[in-house]
Image 1: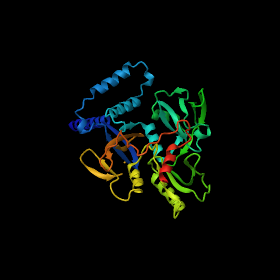
Image 2 (image 1 turned 135 degrees about the horizontal axis):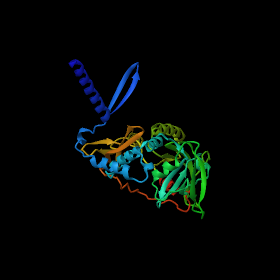
Image 3 (image 1 turned 90 degrees about the horizontal axis):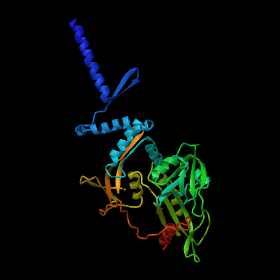
Image 4 (image 1 turned 60 degrees about the horizontal axis):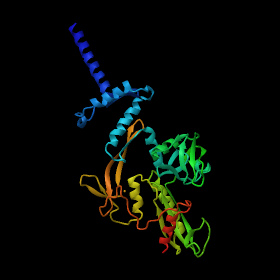
Length: 379
């Protein structure tokens, strides 16, 4: 009898311990080769945070759930994501961010060079979402979207006050679905709606060409001739546009450069290379280092400062480490800042160009900056 009571006590104790572990841990079961595999993921706070009082957090959450008038919007996962986002934003660093699954997926797609949407590069001008340029052969271009178009509405929703990421999130969507953009063109008085069917967009991060250039006396500028257009007395330049440092940038760079090299080899009319980094949002630091190394034979490209008096030669203001958190979410944390070889931190300052060239607001099809680059190259 005593033995049975002892057994029951032991079983109750084990059950209690299991119940406690289930309460503080995430436990998953998986069968592998006819054997159960149990994974326990602790929900306990790390040792360094066990002294933090979370009672206020839970109190506010409970009050919101009990008192908020519209119960239909009380999504626990959204509340949790919002709390995590707020925690990260409290650092005051716009580059340290928590990305819920949808945004994290969009970020990864962007770096992979392939995403589903309309295929237009967007920007903000005077707090208005505008089209910088539709990409060649994409639904945006085929539907008549043009550079400079102001996007007033997306599917009837006013874009006033939207951030660029909000605009991208609303305009992107699954292949085959429709989105209606209400746009206003500079030369037109009334806005108009354009229906666009989304598709899979593939964007190369490295593009370029070798072209003949001819000096036009009447215009006092060099003109870029069309591809294949011959001119025996013309000079030649190579143009390479680098739109980001993504998953395929290095390979795309090598492929393009090897192809262009064949066209300029032993050519006395060749004057040099124009590397276009305009509107490049960045990407992988290692890829940026690789590209920089193509131009710099030796020496320091950039100095990395991790805030602990450690410096080293590297290649990219600040450096973010991207981590997947599971369930599709991600976290980008600023782990270091980079300095120019002379120790200057350009964060939020940028570099002042040796020659500053403004865009032609009246003729957006004209690239005055490229024209100036060619002029300087052939001097």
